[in-house]
Length: 76
Image (cartoon, rainbow, N blue to C red; front, side, top):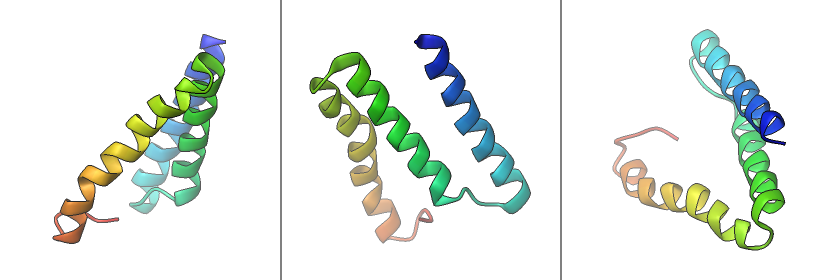
């Protein structure tokens, strides 16, 4: 199971890097795929408690960076 998780992570990261190099941006589809894969991983490994871990890793950084986005210090 760990090999599949690592392989999926590497594929998503490779797609993001290639898209960023070629087009200068990462499509939302790649980002959404990574978020959904992370949620599936947490559910498989930790059950319902994994959702809380996933929210801590996905939602908390987004909330923390909202201030930077609001003041136009970073892009969307």
